[in-house]
Image (cartoon, rainbow, N blue to C red; front, side):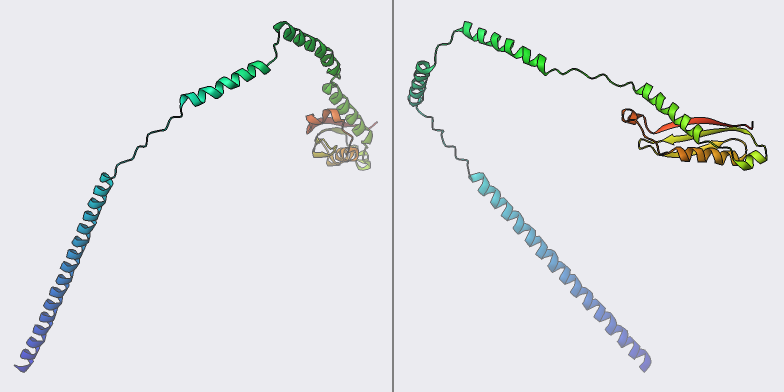
Length: 218
């Protein structure tokens, strides 16, 4: 029996503590709600008072002061009289004559300033001449390799390359039979460059050129 009574007392104490703590928490929550309601009411009252103060204030309109008409009209009349006295009388005939004479004097100056136009160079002809001279120079640097002669290797090598405005070359491609002949064609192009490029055709660069180099035994 003592064990049961002891457990009963303990559980009773725990429940009472729990009930009292819950009641305390509810009281605090109610206090916070009341405080929040009071703050909201005070803010509403203050805003209403401020609106009433703003409504009572009325804008003050001051009448614009207009200057007396007599004080403005008198100096204007004086200024017009002075201008009429000082302004010289100009005849329309003289003004027209002066304009015509100045125009006639200006015409010879305009003719003198116009310089004769220089004839524009024929870029297409200069370009064709440059390509023809370049191909002749490459053919002059062509040689027949001794290894190809011994093996009696012949053929035509199609060459393609790109020339730049500074006279350099790039993208050399050689297509044809026998690697020995292809290397010889590539060496002939490499020996030719760099070249002198005419200034009149610098706008056409980079320029792609194709060429066929024939290798035949005599």
